[in-house]
Length: 366
Image 1 (tube, rainbow, N blue to C red):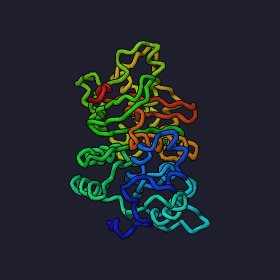
Image 2 (cartoon, rainbow, N blue to C red; image 1 turned 90 degrees about the vertical axis):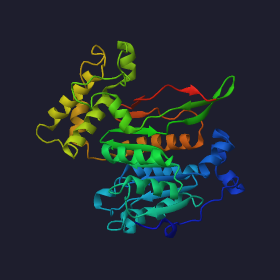
Image 3 (cartoon, helix red, strand yellow; image 1 turned 135 degrees about the horizontal axis):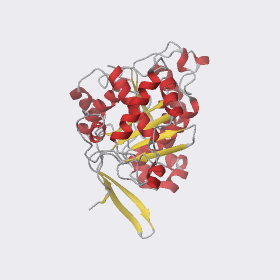
Image 4 (tube, rainbow, N blue to C red; image 1 turned 30 degrees about the vertical axis):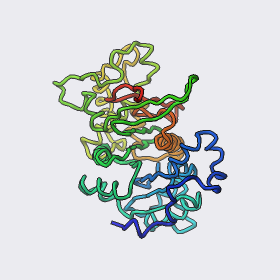
């Protein structure tokens, strides 16, 4: 593993108040979010895992917003297919063949010289290491938020578990063709503030881990077991179900289930569309979705996921990367309500819906 202390590109910012240069650079944001929120962001450390695609737009938005420190981790090298996924890898600068972190670092640094940068030339211990090693690294580097981009569900569950033990907030996100998702786990007791007509109100949320969220739904258990109320769609009226638009979330859960069982994503092979459709229909029934509102999962959606799950599309990366970065900033600033807790995005239809999986209700903080 690379030693983080030897790979910083700028000196970390102090923990004091925002400087005059920062106040000038972030003037618009300070007026929008407030000085306290901006100071929280500039004192934060964000770790991005995997630089393959979604990370590009996410990093751009985080760095321009003025987080304090960014750590990028990836053990791969830039390939030809990486060149079209974002601005971090430039063919004219000889990126192909370089390590992804080495190629990305100068591009990130050019966005905002006030952000401290560190690179790790491996995904270990997050991938292939122990939970104890992961917890130790997160604590050592004082990571506030870890963002896992385009990793498998099983890997995200493992990383999320370690993040909870380290007291680090977790985001898992990825795209599959024109569709994508963001999952947030901000811990058992996440506090934030909202502006109401009556003044500023303190709120709190108790997030579930990804593994808890999945197991609470019932569909991932044996077919003889029943759902214990974890489904956010069970018992909804026809109109409310249509408004909630559960189809894409269910299709994504089906894709995760397929990948978890097969070890790979579908690539449009013979029988894969039908198999993914069968999984999605089973999940739809087991989640208790109103059949009058959603009698089946859209065939075009299933076919697209089964055929393009391994493909990256620039518009989808830009849209989802923007959503992801904005919510990470919201979580760091503790201003306004973050995603609760699974956001599914359809860039073809221009829609996005969020649903709460295995979570308790929001409550006023003491």
